[in-house]
Amino acid sequence: MTEAIRMDGVEKSFGSVKANRSASLEVMKGEIHALVGENGAGKSTLMRILGGLIKPDAGKVEVFGKDVTGWSTSEAISAGIGIVHQHFMLVPTLTVAENLVLGCEPKTRFVMMNYARAADDVRELSNSTGLVIAPDRLVSDLSVGEAQRVEILKVLFRGAKILVLDEPTAVLSPPEVRELWAVLRRLRDNGDTIVLITHRLDEVVELSDTITVMRAGQTVARLKTSQTNPSEIARLMVGREVSLSAGKRVHPTTRPESPRPNQGLEVRNLAVMGSRGIRVVDGVSFSVKPGEILGIAGVEGNGQTELIEAIAGLRTVFAGDVLIDGLDVTRRSVARRHDAGLSHIPEDRHRRGLILEYTVGDNLILGLERAFSKRGIIDRDQVMDNAQREISSFDIRPPNPVLAARALSGGNQQKVVVAREMGRDFSVLLASQPTRGVDVGAIEFIHQQLLDARAREKAILLVSAELNEVLALSDRIAVMYRGKFAVVMPSSEATEESLGEYMIGTRKGSAA
View 1 (tube, one colour):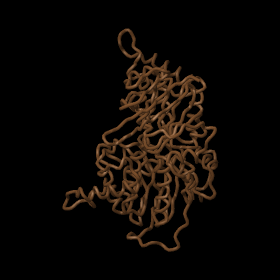
View 2 (tube, rainbow, N blue to C red):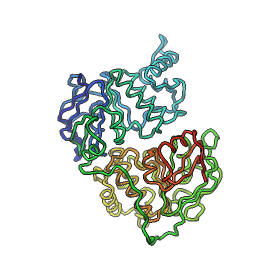
View 3 (cartoon, rainbow, N blue to C red):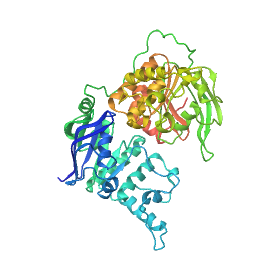
View 4 (spheres, rainbow, N blue to C red):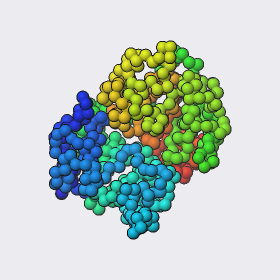
């Protein structure tokens, strides 16, 4: 087989942080190659070097046998490298076609953009790849799965023959994941090369042909997928045995002392309006008791986001009530809800969870500034002490409290959010996609933190796109479909198959 990518002895440092240590990568043409490792293992840095976004300090990079070490982004694109980033880079106010041709617009002889030609080009590419999407649709109107298709089409439109996909399924529903896998297999069979960065080891085993494992900036193994398994991959990633399944821990026989009169979370007939004046949450009622995890499953876009944001105080409630420990907080601010005992891990860490320009230490006290202040002035020593403690407890890498949050990998950014929200005094936790984009070791740790909080009689509302996560952690499971709870059932009665049927509306149940 022809070698598509060869990277040897790659070194890259950012100040005192060594991101790559003599790292290597070998990918053959026409294969799906999984690149795996813990958060901060150096995967993204290696791919940014491949894509010309940064230059290596040492080492050699070859693409299709040509030495391209230190090349530019434009040179990488011209040579057929296409990177689909974890966080989409589309312009929401433009159409699909306009996004795809942005920067390389087809012109008429009068130098105006030829919209008809652009739409035809996009439609032809869309149909030929199986990534079907109408070229005249606004990106702001697309579902997450559709936006993912546009990102892939964008790099293919520019002639990419090597596709690098960073956590491509992190925000996709199970049906959308299956559609994406079919597309990637079709591209591979047509001779394209796929490099897949993912923390979902079941996907690695199902989809890839070969695997490179990185740890602490180094390449530690290259495996044939058919000759390995998720447990071995996880052990190589973390350097120890890792439990890949969460188990519900038994409740303690006596309840620990709590400074709060825990009554949990109660939601009564909640209605939330969407941007088009339609009820996106339509009369939902439920409660989460102390010492219980209620998991919510559903295809993205069925009201889960709006439900959580309304409970958190980030979205206006049209009708209904939200009670925390018996206190009505429906019209109260986010800060007052925090005071009442609410903590919130948001699904979008960039938009809702972090200020990327702030340091890790300052992000760890967002919303808690009063507790770290004396007469209105923040006590920096106290902030640093808190940061060192949380960094150690949650294994945030690199362990530097004065580093800007923007400099961290996505998974380590998520750890900052989880550390802050689970480190504060709370009685009700909204955990929305808490393990999105984190590695297997961190997933194991976060799951244990949720179970520990449950054992301490905290009420936890968990929203996750990972059905196995919902099944493993929840005491009860609700499925949201078109703004309502299609069913609420004990997790012992649920399976991935039955939940999937409720999620797409082919099965009816009781939401009582």
